[in-house]
Length: 279
Length: 119
Image (cartoon, rainbow over all chains, first blue to last red; front, side):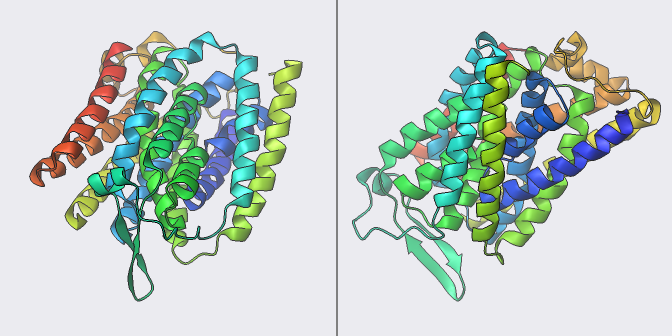
């Protein structure tokens, strides 16, 4: 197809990815890479490059709104980022050593996992009545977040486990060119027991920094193609800004279920294509 | 803490908007020249060397050719991520929070190192 048609279609798909990404705490890469690879027949490395940049944009764009509203915990985000950047550094180093088929299959498995997580995520994880983890107290990670009529406290648990999961999330981010939002949210939701909106927004906050670690290597390896990345970036930014505006007033549970099913299908296709080598 | 949140938010907003505009200008220029060409992203050959290193991208941007401009806009977005970590670190310095100053410094160092060592 022509450059113009291609760019407009990619823009549209990216808009959706950015929008969903902002709403679900994922980076959008889980939708973007399979769409580019399966629908548009883009080589997986170019798709990874475009995706990496787009998750940076989603993260930054939606963080603007979430920070202002007071949902994001900068302290928790920065602390966990220590693990994430180490993981991302290692992951990005490994990416050129892994054959494309392996990347596709790993990616597909990651999608399966994301699909499952997104489906089964409860709207508000019950706050444990147990006291916060000692690390959380030492680092003053506990905080408050806005609810209708004021602020609600939350305490933070299982800090070392969350840090470990973040390191894995970072490695996958570097290896696959994604934001690893699903894993980040998992660590914060399930391990740390943070409220839903705090996990989602803090995950979004972190993703951009993690992705930037891999950027240097992706640039150097030639994965980032400007003509492809341009419609992706424009679409994703527009989508993320729109999505972030909408989050506070939205019941995202049905959206997440739909998203989860879509991701499931994409996962199966990616794994299939990876195995049969038609990438 | 509120000040920090708002300041980071403002930085990100300016950064994203600038990156968006640079990429948009470059993109429109690219479409203007190429709208009827056919796309083929199936084969991976790696993009040209002038789009792969910081110095090359900066040089290219000065020529204001569309693709170079796009690549610069992308690089700019990456730099915004570094700036945001630096800004966070700055606020922790203000708050004299030693642990978090160290955390921010570590994250920033990893970012800088990974960018410079591959460019």
